[in-house]
Length: 90
Length: 375
Image (cartoon, rainbow over the protein chains, first blue to last red):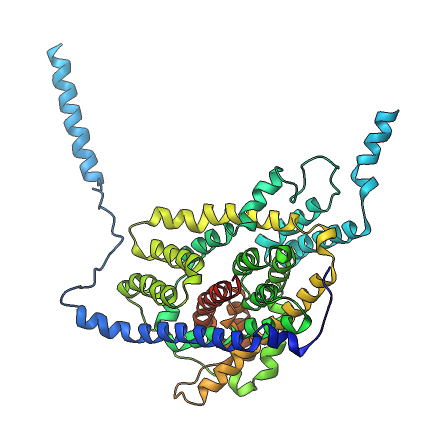
């Protein structure tokens, strides 16, 4: 069972202030670096454009051939001709 | 007759303690909040039902409860106690998150850092109350407003407090729409709340692909303790943005995160047995958790006001409140409070920037605390 022992000394003993200050500095440094990187990224990419051009569609899927109604009619006609020929050979 | 007598002696009714009844009541309250108020239903409902399950008194000698070695619930809880589930949830969050608003307005990232002050001030408060440094670190992370991070760190630093910390973190996340608005209004003037921000610029696909890799390297090289959480977050985001692994991204943000959320929420709920949960330290954790949420919100708002002293294009300080990483609830709260002053002011997209920066910030803070306090 936990016993409450309110004491400023607990913070000192646990290096609370040092940990808090160091922790906040590290978090700020990391996020500030990320912020700086994001700010610079468009400029860096502009410089890299000749070597690493932007691709329009990274997730472009392989185009599937669409069958139009005209194509369907042509296929039906060819099938009909083949059917007639095979019928006439019987 | 003896068999019937023995059986009756082992029933839950015979062994029910008042504490168990209170926890069953809390479980019902969570379920009610989830269903009636729509407060974080994906989490509060599994936790609430788990809390009911976990507080049915177990039969002596039978491995049924979450703390009984070899029980099914114990196996599920293994994912929580060993910190396996939180990184998997981060993978799903990464696959869901669009960093575009953050990439279009990088100065808002700093608001996500400012709100993490809540973590470290809570740590000091917990130390003052007499918690050990490891326990204080685990309690402090509640201020990050990030449930998976809180569970991950408490599993590593103070496993005996995991149930209380997880419940506190998720309860306060659910109560973001209640806790944050008064603080936001108290710390801002009407004129500040009416500030309109320029719409975000378009972000190229190349930037979106490079960011998770560069972001991970920056975080991991400075704070290696954050590798697990940050690594999964950015990996999930790369799956999404690469455009060539849509199936994997889709699984991470749907099936995987749903499965893990069910197991995590339910087993955390089961771990709230009255005998281990209803203690003075749990009450202290709840009090510190509420304070840490309030402090984190205030720090974000005040830092936005501080930044406005130097900026030509002013930031609406309400956006600072989204620096706590309760995604996307705190961003929604910013939108709601902003629109209550000016219905034509759309702050949601702007608020998402510090919101996702807050996720990174709290994961980094967890990594720092873990690496320092685990020794």
